[in-house]
Image (cartoon, rainbow, N blue to C red; front, top):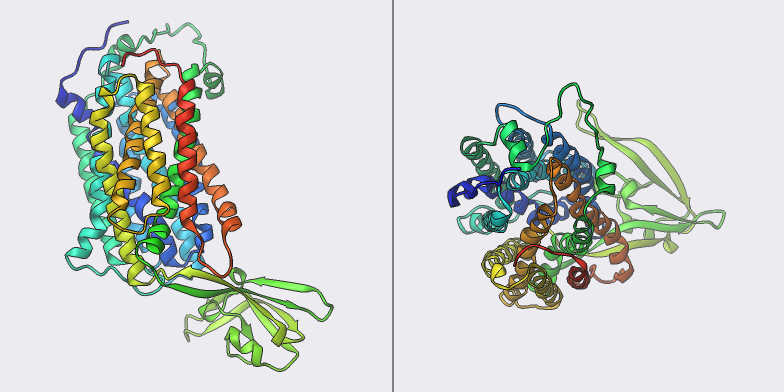
Length: 535
């Protein structure tokens, strides 16, 4: 096997420059998705559920992309075609997602559209991001991989800073940062538009500057033995590759689990935490359903999610549509609920399909199920949303600075573990700090963990891989990023429900505390990784 040649700085730079545009898109998603869904009208307890589909699609798509790109040869290369496809889909979806609440849809339909858009956006971003990681594995020798991934980390964080501060900048130049109830502010909408344009430019730059090795040269540099056409080559599916994966694949993956679990909680709950603790966002009380006892003595609870009418209200027989009016009605009261609400295109009037009826023997005893929430349409909430972008930018700046320090800290394992411990301190402190500027310290520390998470896992893994399955293994390794996010997303509602009370807004800051504990456990797990590479 030939030794891969040293590459000049600008060649290493060009291999990863497209990461800058991809990361702008990723930053806009991570900083604004919870804000977008809350603004549309989603229950804060459900926020984590919106993050299930993206990593689930990543677990399916990434191994396929990695395996397919190992066997792809086109005039554009083997990895770049997947960059083009992923980036183009991301650009389209970035123009749709922030407009989910502005198309005249019902709340449930707007949320569903947002979920589908988020799924496509996260999948396409990961599809566009993965080729850059593979290109470093393909074309950079082991001596330079640390530098190559550090450059990638720098560009990643630079892109993050730009994406995070867009809403703040657009507010400063005069775009509206508050929108009608159910709609996303223009500061967020135009941030996604500009991010999509920059991503397009970065993809074009990458296609022009990156020249992948032809098949024969690639095989020589990566130790791939060409099999004669008349010889049956042994084939390995993804399951077989997993069975023969090096131990480093699994031990680094365990650390990844705790780290990405923590960051999913950060992306989901920072907005609510900062809005309540640092910006004193006003709260509103909303009705989530109705509980009453029917004529047979059976207690019935109707969830407001399944009660659709004008303004999502329960429709009663006096035609008022006002929940509070139930207390003033005479018994018995017929409660009408609708599974479908339709607008007559000719008259514009609403009419109800699939109407159900319930008799309430004593309306005065009916109990309204209420929930206290932060007012997502308030100026304070949207100021907090912009500030979250600034905090995430501070995190990225901390990551850039810490990435320069990492190579000087000795062994990879020591610097990896130290970085995660600092990140744990940052998460835990962010749960309780009420001064917006003091939160800078917390997110600088979180940036230390992020720098290590971007640089060391792929360095450790690619140093342990040989042969022609690098793309497949990197695709499979992406599951160590996706799986913990899925687990965290599914667990989020249950955990938040356990610590919530009906008379107070959901304590999202406790979720940040839990994130700190998780990443602290990840720091302890670094000790089981075997690293044979030089410091």
